[in-house]
Image (tube, rainbow, N blue to C red; front, side, top):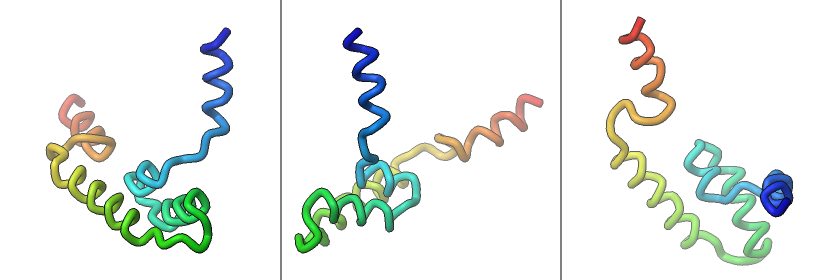
Length: 78
């Protein structure tokens, strides 16, 4: 029963700014960050940290990893 409650509750959780940035939605990420921290809060430093972490993760990812690597792997199989 607790797992069911957790599963249903997770559907109502907002996306995190980091996950939105990782998926290529920086405008939505900044909007969520502003909503969480308050409209008048200066979130520029926190956004810079999120963007730097996203850029580092993209550079550290092995070539072909993630969804962009799936079509190339499927093409090699067929």
